[in-house]
Image (cartoon, rainbow, N blue to C red; front, side, top):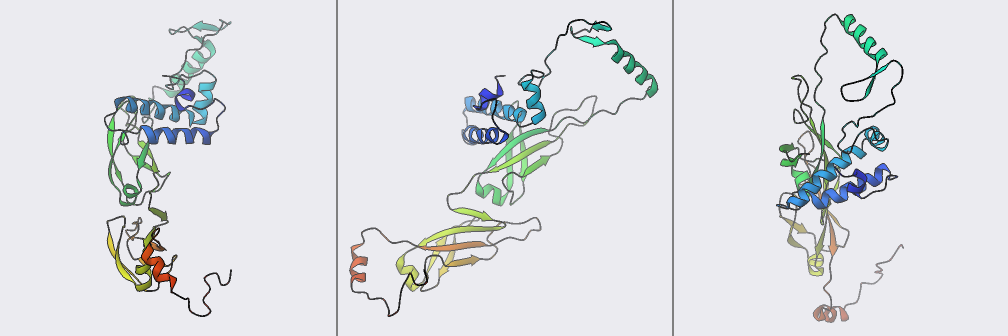
Length: 292
């Protein structure tokens, strides 16, 4: 595997935050969901994910920098000059005879007891969701290192940075031990219209001058689809409307609200509007900037 610093496009002196930002940018661009059918991008996504897993772990990063492990996380053989009390092992590395004797006596002290098989290591992955997917939840496929894909159940209302655990989908354990788990870190992409505030969803809704002045019933988007909203007569930009139960479901099943902020939108170069306002006089004492 290539140098993980080169794979992520960062310097060896990069901070953890710089590594994280570089990975997020690459993962968003190369994710199989963003480039369906692009095998080259999928392979590069796997390499980028593997590089991030190594460099985001301070201990493994330090070991890689010291040359103790390679870019795949495998141990690198270290050769030493032969010293008294040492002998070459089967892999060419020198073993300390004192360590061998210590191990022997430790084995005798165990009186034949076997060490308990250790559970396999966990696998980390990144799960990229759009705003609606994160709000609604549902099933989502995750591509793991090596190309394997698994289906992950996403609960409604997951947040950016939240880690979802899928038991038994990690690396295999040794000597018949159970496999590790999959730990999927959620990345929620921003939405062009919606934003989130706890369990509430916020939305800026443009309305015409006539709708604001006389009131109207208009269609407004929600995370579950468009609904009818009544605009009160005489509404100004900044007026807030609340749609009960149209927000994001919490762990207890209760849903937040959708908060709509009205924004009066004027058409450009509307001759009729200009003619109507030409003869309009504001009421006595009216000052839109009063109190500023």
